Image (cartoon, rainbow, N blue to C red; front, side, top):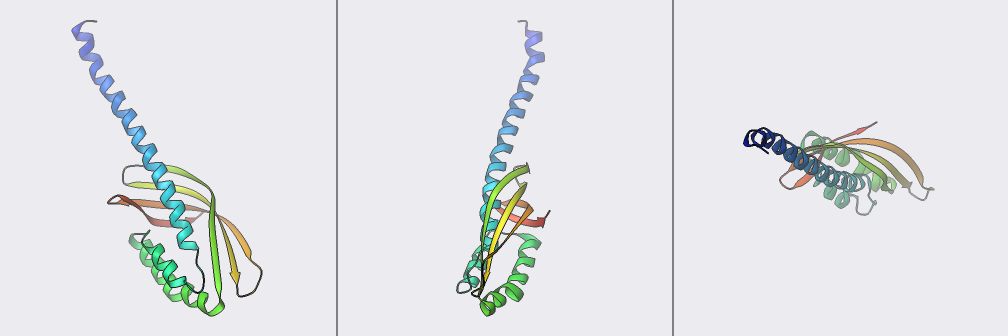
Length: 150
């Protein structure tokens, strides 16, 4: 192969190598974001009346930005007092999750969420929903920045 051909092929090979590395990085980011979205969603939707403050305050460490502020207000003003007064407990599960898109510092994940809620001594009621979770990478952690039912 002549020097001229090698010179022409070198940028193409470099581009393909970069594209392969970029795709790999995106797959890794997507997988990490799916785990963070799943674990975060379970944490923010699961609590017991006797530990509701501790449960939901711990969930706050998985959030950032305006979503963190809105979640904090909602839980302190409504959820925590209601859970204590009416003896509400909730357990969330995520039977399915998929990465919609992911870059090194932002990801969007689609989740199917089931939440079983018990009020006092009543029978458990279960709801199923789909949620689009946006995450931002802050330092080395994926944090939930948006949580939108779909």
